[in-house]
Image (tube, rainbow, N blue to C red):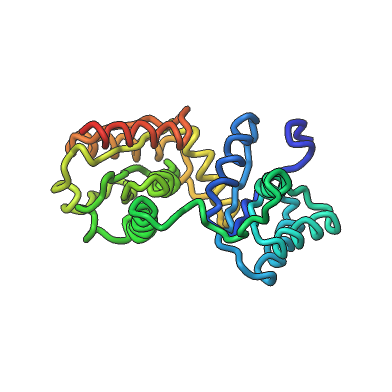
Length: 274
């Protein structure tokens, strides 16, 4: 038995919101950072507006024994979540409900109960939306035509957190694209035309990368491929990636002992000071 997880092999945390879910996600990540959890899955359910969708999420939470952290401002959805949590034995945490009730009682006023008011329609909001759309379209080398527009181009071998890093940057309004470094293959010529100040190369400890790759294959139900998971193969891949970074004069970041937030802060600092 894993004493740290009380016998639970995988720990799921669901973030549920009828808006962007930023508040609940920040609370979840802040809390999780205080624990050493080897296999935690943070899953987001955003812009939840229907009772049917909410009940589907609850059913999945029951199946995976997930902790649910939610921000639902509509009474109907919030009450369903609270009631179903009790009836199904789900551990759920209402982030915004108690605060709304307290303010309402003190001021003797009723809240508007409209999701997303904290994100008033302004230039900054649209900038984040554009950045998120950009990150999704330019994930994992899917497109290279729009790369010159990127604030940051992230390179790295498989399982070096390229996608979550790009999405994290996008949530802060920065357009980030990522391209995988695969085996000994070269990368698209367009990358060599990007200003070096925009290019960031990720590296990590081969043992850590191997562990992440094995876990990924396990979750996908795929057989282990030694070319993909062996320490020796990964060392060659990382050496190849470093050679590419050197040619590009890219800024190299070793993410082995760094959180996504730390890596993003380093990149944002360099973007703002270039």
